[in-house]
Image 1 (tube, rainbow, N blue to C red):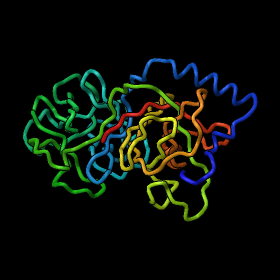
Image 2 (cartoon, rainbow, N blue to C red):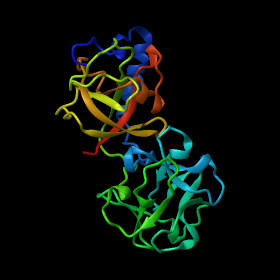
Image 3 (tube, helix red, strand yellow):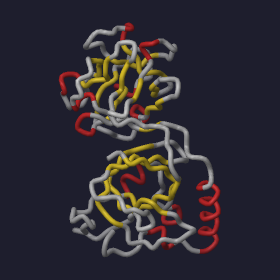
Length: 272
């Protein structure tokens, strides 16, 4: 954070630091992660969700406030499936008409379980040639998901996990900050928000407001953070840091807030 002391990972010392640096070196030379697992966010920043986290066939798929549970962890597969809780996103009864509801169902390989995630952020069922859609554009928790003729409207726009390309790097977390602390963008700091500082190690710097999909290489967890700060930590060859996450975002990605485990290896995808 601008004008604040270095983040917690800068304090790592001794044998533990050496071990972490050796581990990071091996991870950072590995191939980029291929897993495309994480949240699918849509209208009002809410998540595609399996109702009640129930894996039974026929469970409704809905819009719901993002909460980091397994019911909101989706894997976009190279076979065209979109999976959660071990089952597939499915169009009820193989229907192709506007308003056909989405549900969870045992994966069968059928056309009603095939999806294409486009660069325009549509999720399209090719069989129906229709888009995944939040019914009536209603952003309330529990609103059913359906398919509908693609219109380009906000209730059909989704941010889905995608195969990660680009370099792996270290993400750190802020740790405690004084009350009323400000970010470099002038915003009041919120240590539970999905926001981050772009590291001084990253060139070029990401502009304020940039949205970045961050994926933890170790567990496949993914979320979208917004850049609203600049890091003050110094670039070092041993610690190729790219993001300084809030404690809340770091925890949601599966990072430990223990002072001696303040790094996770991530990939990052700039969305806009």
